[in-house]
Image (cartoon, rainbow, N blue to C red; front, side, top):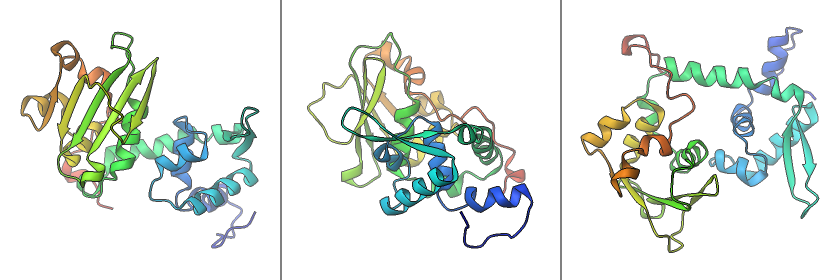
Length: 237
């Protein structure tokens, strides 16, 4: 497969970059590594990507040999599976994420938080602890976003976590009220979780035994434990 803007070099870095550095490609791979393998689940992780472009990118990745399409026998649903070559890209993808967490300034990211992506990331990194009620319902109310994106429900049930955008009459166990920027900073590890509760910039209401272990069941980003460089060393983008 030939790409527009080919570097025309035999260098393996140049040849790899021709498809890996296409817009959205690395984010699609991120979704696959996080366990999304259906078109709709991958799309939820790249909410600003058109479905047509996503379809084209998946076809390209399959043509190259990074993923393969597999049809489930039940219902004929298509799932996308990483090949051995695709799996070998995992350290590349996560190293880029870790570098960004360590070196890039936080404010540009916080200024353009995608609500849908943040909530989807929270869903997949939350921890369905065995000590939680089953089901366990968390209502997240974002205080500073549009009404149609302000309410979200995390449903912990049978060892899994689901995300709902519509109130289905849930019996809520815990409610979290927080601004979107504060939530993003806490989630990414840029602000301290316990301090946000203490200063009430993030309010968690519910039974004390559940609130006390909120940091455990809520979780954090997969790169949250990587410390930022001092501000004078961080770079703009």
